[in-house]
Length: 176
Image (cartoon, rainbow, N blue to C red):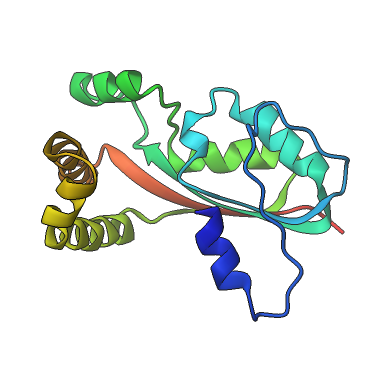
């Protein structure tokens, strides 16, 4: 992912740095970043309120966070979805609660949007692309890996269509 990001940044005349690190252990000086971006990864963080407070400290005044992340519908999940969440070690919240955690961390202008319909469409396109490259994927990895990935992808839109698995888009700003 980092190499893809670097390739895309070349020629855009922008000052950007990328780093691979354990974000739950890494610290930065206050007011270090203009923007913090996360794509479908914070679902693994168990203490989101503390994590968002760190984001708030690390951002410069006027800085923003842009996050997409797996969420769940409000209320208790079905036993099947609960088992999936537990098996994966996820910490999922509904979109509104996730947005509230950002507000509680000190952010202003918090946007918390349910983007599940878009998630279903993107998941289908990703699944179609992987299925087109099935033979190459299996030669690079294994048929078991392929079946696990495709099976996981196929279950996401089903859970989402049933209303259990959601995708949230979150944008929040630190006051100037």
